[in-house]
Length: 269
Image (tube, rainbow, N blue to C red; front, side, top):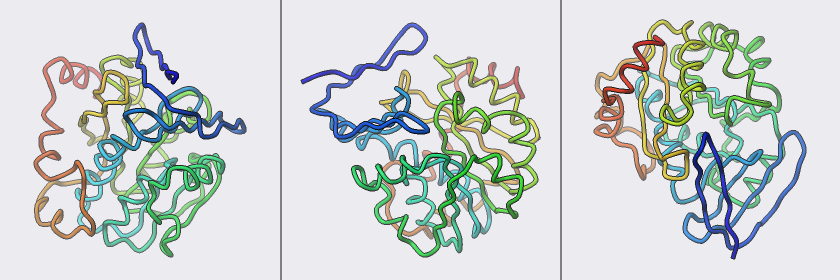
């Protein structure tokens, strides 16, 4: 057996792999592995995107926090998210339409073939798939209730999804937005940049989750817009399908930040 290593800022993560299932290079380098302890694993441009073991820790927090913070989310856009995990979670809500916008068709096709974490979400009649850059999509699209940004790291093809212009467009196009904002502990520069650039959403907050296969396990998210946490328990009771990680208690606890992180956020917001 071999090991997959991911390095970041003077430290790293090692995951034991059984075999490589597939590798291709197009818009991005996409690799899919079968691991010893984490199940199947998706890697894009050398960075772990998800493992079967803990993808729910990420996708459920990215999706249910904004969806249950909007009073009636019917029209949803997912920017990125070609693996289908976020789309799967969106369809646990009573939505009428979910548009998934990803720049790389390969990611969608390979994840459907080798991972299947969408659990049929791509076949849902309410799903629309658009292959293009997310910022370009926002320039000409209509209004959405919720926009969920499920991107790779803010470099390369995803770089346009994190500049100020993107958030200016998004503010015009949705009531509530959520996005992953990297590890505030080991990827502080990325994290701070996202906090600054998301300022078109004057009201925004950081929340956190534990994702073991991400840098140092601590991962952050930003929610912005016209959200509220009233009737959270009642709204949660109305979703279809069980969650593996998310619940209203975890939702509330995710916004309880440690002192060092409060300081970081205060300096940027």
